[in-house]
Amino acid sequence: MRHLMAALAAAVLISTIASADTLATKDLAARTELHSVPTVWISDEQFLTGDRNGRPVTVSGELSLPPGTGKLPTVILMHGSGGMGANVGYWKRQLNALGIATFAIDGMTGRGLVGVGSNQAVLGRLNFIVDIYSSLAILAKHPRVDADRIVLMGFSRGGQAALYASMERFHRMWNASGAQFAAYIPFYPDCATTYKDDTALVGRPIRIFHGTPDDYNPVRTCKAYRDRLLPAKVDITITEYPNAPHGFDSPLGFVPPRQTAADQSVRDCTIREGERGVLMNAATAKPFAYTDECVRLRPTVGHDPEATVAVTKAVTEFLKQTFRM
Image (cartoon, rainbow, N blue to C red; front, side, top):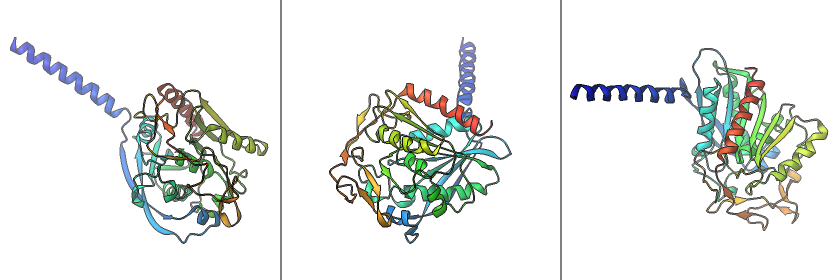
């Protein structure tokens, strides 16, 4: 009996190890590299006027490489106001399992920040675009990255950066990499701001994924921007999920969704770029501030498993087509 029990235990152990190995390696990167990304900490006004005289900072990027030896298609992942959360980890796993490298930018830690959801003014929203272009310069020279097959994907504040990083004006001013993104994938971005020349884009596809009940960054503002872009024949679509709250693709998000403790939302603001790069509140005709009456607190965030399955399928199909996989 003792030998039988030992044999059974050994069989269970071997089965468990085999199962764990399968689960652990399916989406495991064969190599991970941490890269220093030189950038700056500037105001949005400085960004919009091309003023580089900000505080030099170094942020980091995590390059995850699937197995293989050749050049790989790559997706840059730009997190939101809360920093590098579970949704970034989720997409790293999904994309690495497809044979796509990922470069996850941490735009917070190097600036001494954890998150800025409850104090959005501490970091100009356009700083992430500088971080993105600086990361693109690193990836364009990496021996394992196919510089012609790099896609930008961002979430919330990072989704806003991913959306507006497609502007020709910003490329001319800030993108010194010599490279170009193959496509842009913003998740639930803030589209409440109108910039000068923001209908002149670089001519690459834009795929926005959003949720109908999102009260952090409402989809209606993105629809309004899309409608302004259509006459310019921009290849842009918005996929809207009927039950998806803000942050719906995060596996660790609240189910059911909950209000945040004190996050700031500009969902009821209309912001326009004025003279000398000053962002103006259209309702007051004064420079916008997060103390303005239109700023709302405690938007709702949470996870939607059904929308996550659907968006994973949609993004996978789009990337396979874009990367010619």
